[in-house]
Amino acid sequence: MNTLFLKDMRYRQARVVLTALGITVLISLILLLGGIMNGMRIQAQQYVKSTGADIWISAEGSGGAFIGFSLLIEENMAPLTAAQDFVTGSVSPLIFAQAQPKIHGKSTKAIVVGYMTGKFGGPKHVIEGKMFKSSEFEDYRPEDPVPNEVIVDEKMGLEIGQQITIGTETVKVVGKTESLMFVLDTPLLFMDIRVAQKVLLGNYPRVNMMIARSKPIVRVDVNGQTEKIEQPEKVAANLDASDAIEARTVEQTLKDIIGYYVDEPMKAVQFLRVMLWLAAGLLVGMITYVTMLEKTQEIGVLKAIGASNNYVMALLLKQVALISVIGVVIGFCLSYLFAAAAPIFVAINLVESIIVASISFIVCCGSGYLAARKAIMVDPMIAFRGEIDSVSTRNVHIPSEVLVGSGDGA
Image 1 (cartoon, rainbow, N blue to C red):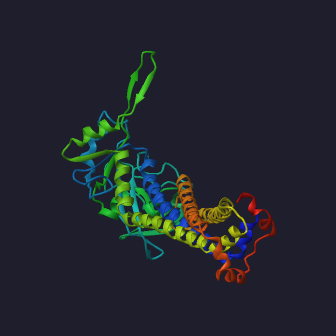
Image 2: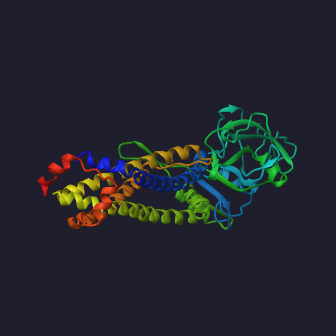
Image 3: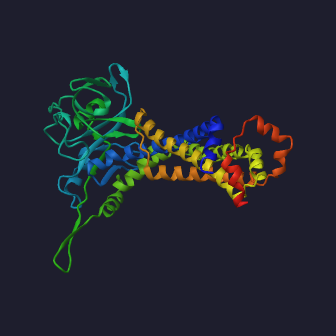
C-alpha cells in the first residue's frame, strides 16, 4: 500500500503533471493579483507616512488633498503658522500634482512634489548626490532665484546630472532617494516649492495643500508623570469647521487615497479575482473528480481480490493529497518569483498566501474524497466483465503484496 499509489501515479504521469500544473497556475494567478493590489496599497501610503504630518489641509469642496482640485493661496494660510494647535514650525506648504515630464525625449508619467526644505513634505536626506538648493525666503519673491534641481527615486534609473523636461522648463537631477514611489510605481519628483510653482503654475504663488503636525496635549498623572496625548482628530475637526478649507487626519487622508487610487480603479480586478477563485475551485475539483473516476476499473479489480473500502479510499486520497501539495507548493513559490520579476511593485502577503494555499488544498482533497466515495461503490463484478479486458490492455500493475495482503482489512 505504501508504494502502490506512487506506481499508479507514474503510470498516469501525464494526467498527474497536468493536474498539478493546473493547480500551480491558478494558485500563482490568485496570489499575484492579490500581490498587485497589496503593492498598490503600500505605495499609496509610503509618501504620506514619510512626511511625518498628521493634518492635511486642502481647499473647501476639493474632497481631500489628493482627490479633487485644490488650490490655496499660500499667503492666506499664514495665520495657520501661528495656531496653537500645531507643533511650532510644522505648518508646511505643499504642491502634489501629476505631470508628464520628458526623459530622454520620451514622455512619461510622474508626480511633482514641491516643498520647502526643513519643512514637511519631502525626503530629509538622499542616498546619493545632494539635496536641491532651496529658496531663501518663505514667501514668494521674484528676485529670489532658485536653480531648477530635482531629487528622484533610485528606481527611475536616472543618473546625477541628467536633465528632465517638465512643460517648458528643464530640471537637473542632483540627488536620489529610495522607497518613495506612488501607486503603480509612479515616480515622485521632489523639488523646491518655488521650482514646482515655476514649472507647473508659471510662478503663480499657489499650493495644493498645507500639512502640519498637531501639538499633543501634555497631562500629568497622580504620580507626577507627564503623558503626551495626540489629538489630530480634534484639530482637524476644528479646522474643518471653516468655510474656506477642508482638514483631514493622516488616517482619513490614507483612506481617501486608497479608495480613490486603489479600490475604485481596481474593482474590475477584484471581481476577476473572485471569479478566479470560483474557477479554481471548479476546475481543480473537476480535474480531481475525473481523475478519481478513471480508476473505477482498477478499484473493481482491487475489491474483487479482497481489498477493503478503507484500503482503496486511503490509496486514492494519498494520490490526491500528494498532487495537491505539489501543485500548491510550486504555485506558492512561482508567485513569489514572478512578483520579484514583475515590472511593477508586487507585495504578496504571506498570511494571505497561506490561506489561499490551504483553501486550494482543501478543495482538491474534498473533490478527491467525493470522487473516491463514488468510485469505491463500484461493483467488483465489473472487473470481470468486458471492462476487465481494457484494464489488462492498459497494463494496470497491482503488486503481489497487495494481492496477498489486501484482503486482511476486507
